Length: 329
Image (cartoon, rainbow, N blue to C red; front, side, top):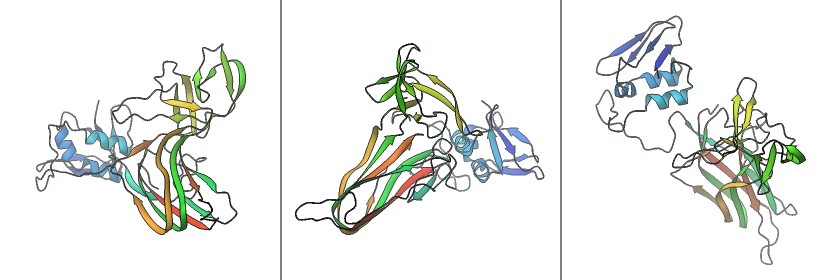
């Protein structure tokens, strides 16, 4: 693999600090392959990452121009036995964070608009306002566009008013692919919920959703904490120009990257029926992160607590989610 940096300024040369008084000069609109000139440690310690983040240069692997997130991960991919030190003081660089390289911390009280894969922050608001006589069980969905914007769930904040043991839960659930009964189709239903490939002659269901769209039902299955690929029965390629999935193909051995679900399935529960009383504020703190895959939805639902001692009542709750995202605007 090459590590080619390209000067994005077609009018001015660019001078970049490398290490120990070394500089590299890239002609206007020119490019230089770093490998063979500098060690991986020198590259990681240099100012190249700064210029990538500022958009002054882009990194090319010899075939493709890489986005900032991938580029920064490659720049900092230094063998563990090699230390990364500040090139001015010589001190060891240490920074403890759950944030993935190339992402930014993002505080939000709303989701994204799922109908626009590039949207950030214009989806449903994460608030509940219960009035006497309303349904005692209410759910809202928060969608985050991950297909073009790598996104990790970190932690959250909750503020509430006039609660009387009212509760909130937060799940990650699958987007649903709509189906109907069929015969001799390419799809079968496993366990009553998971859409798997048939051999093309014994399928019992048909898909009626447009699965080429971002909301059609394809769910990207993220790797486990140990880096293992989960079982998934479909592969697909996302075309960012047309904003459509292409080359949707079966993976009958379960070694694909996407699944489709005929019914909503809980993929993980982060908050389980936490009760609130009176007025207050709480930080749901975590040192961990979980990556959200495309098609995974945050489902928040409240239960207004009513019994003989606690009649129906007005109460409100507002939530903030902390994410780490590749793009925040």
